[in-house]
Length: 155
Image (cartoon, rainbow, N blue to C red; front, top):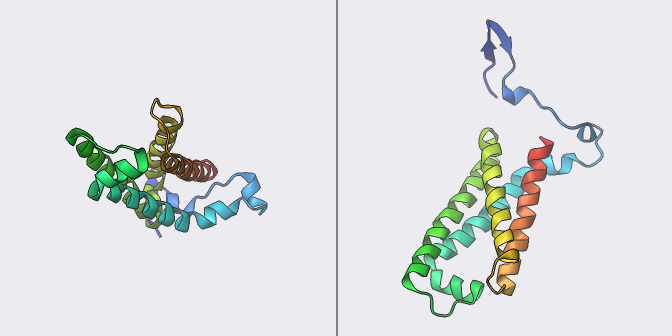
């Protein structure tokens, strides 16, 4: 996998050879399910996220109408929806990438979890009227964020 690192003239194993799991994962009581399934979780959640971002980029007026109840968005609102779409698509693509490159997984999942918790907090506690689609977005992103944080806490 990786080359051993050298520290002070002595050879130490690289990070890909060191695995520190909480004791409950070593006992085999089901905690490894998240760790062993994280690859497909990241691919599915990343594709869902990237799809939402692409909808914002390519179909901003439709997304604003169906998702947020905005019937006649101003040009600046459409611009911001497109920009938001690019950012969300980037988070989704990076999440999929992290499924294949574990070395970058930590910072990517931390950033994705922050983004997903933030949209949930804004939807549930913001001043706007919440639509059913907004509620679905908040719940889905909240679930993804919880999975990411649980994985990060258990590695």
